[in-house]
Amino acid sequence: MTEGKPIPNKPNRNQKDFKIEQAPTPNNTPSIKKINTNVDPTELLKNLDLNSGNKDESVKNILKGVPNAHQLLSSYLQEELGDLEGAQSDYIATLPVEEKQIMYALKAQEEEIRAMDYQYQLELYQLDAKYQKLRNETLYKLRSELINGKVEPKLEDIQLGRDLIKEQEANDVNDDDDEEEIVTEGLKYSGIESFWLTCLSNLKTCSSTITDRDSEVLSYLTNIKLDYLPLKKVGEEDIFGYGLIFEFAENPFFSNDKLIKTYFYANDTDYEGGLVYKESRLLQPIEWKSDEMNVTVEVHVKKQKSKKTGKLRSLKELIDVESFFSFFSPPDLSILDEIEDDDEAYEMQLTFEEQLGLDYAIAEEIKSDLIPRAIDWFTGDALQYKENEEEEDEEDDDDEEYTDDEDDENYDDDEEGEEEEDEFAGVDKQQPPECKQS
Image 1 (cartoon, helix red, strand yellow):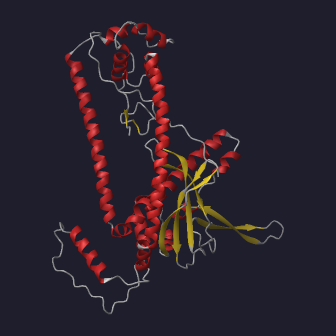
Image 2: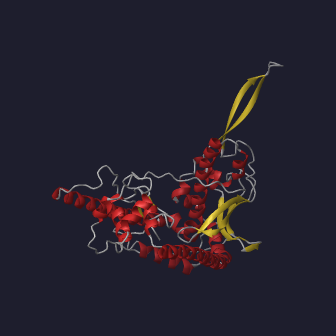
Image 3: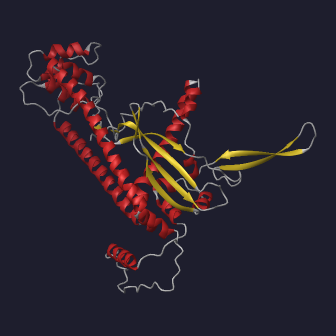
């Protein structure tokens, strides 16, 4: 497989709530506090023709002999002009040679930091792999046996689990104070029916892809495992990633007893220092027992009259439909290299980007949320935790918006109280976008 061509984002900077989630340095001009000086920034800017084609030279001429003027002008431009095109290049142009060279050195150092972040992620990956192997051999093995009725639960585990649940429900006004007596004699444990289907149906992203037909197939799902691939060096490239293993009981839909989806990481980190996906692969395609049993398609039968014999014949047409099991058919990005028309390639790229985004989101949800906390997704406790987490994020966003609105109101009040000549009449004064940096 080949990696897809990157698609440039085209954000609308005029949008009020526009934000840059991951803005690479140095595209974000650093925020600088106003500097105490007797020089009025408006006096500096009176002689600056913002519509001039030679703005860099104009800026340099104005700043000659003015202490800290390049910092002062940068601060003023950011606060009053916001995202005015060319402001950042003007700011960089005003830096003394020494500061520019320090800036270049810092940028080079940033690459060394990224390289160190990558080495950290490699070591963390190997530590995760070590403990995942231990979990699979002990705790997760026992979990699977309990779910599928292969072993009976121990009395001490039943008691501890019940106490933990009662502790969680301590604030429930409907909680029954009468302690239930634990009886184990004469019971025949056969596991929990549709355990993993229930878990997947409670996951936000996964559940959005599960259809009624998918549910029938997923009722045969007996286990989901996570295995880390051993870290290997091939030439200069590190090969590493993980596999999601879906184990199925015998069923009328397909003959596979396992479906294994493998994810590989790129030899790089994202802007926040985390690993990024390179590609995903399916070890073996799903072997559907018939087209009618294939839940990723609908079978349409058409009657057609033969021109030679005049007899009617049936033609079968397979129409792709939305399905959770499309997760096991990752897009083949090599198709992009075969498309000659640029517009068609771009549209196909957009489709692949959407499919890959969903693919990686489902994988992360299963890997990071479901597998470590399967019982909480079965009971629904994890849903409450996620809802609280999302509410906190929304409250943080609301606080930021409220602060922005307050600032706008204060700015309007100042304008009403003071009637001064506007040095930037006719110039777009939109505020700079809020940049989230980590």
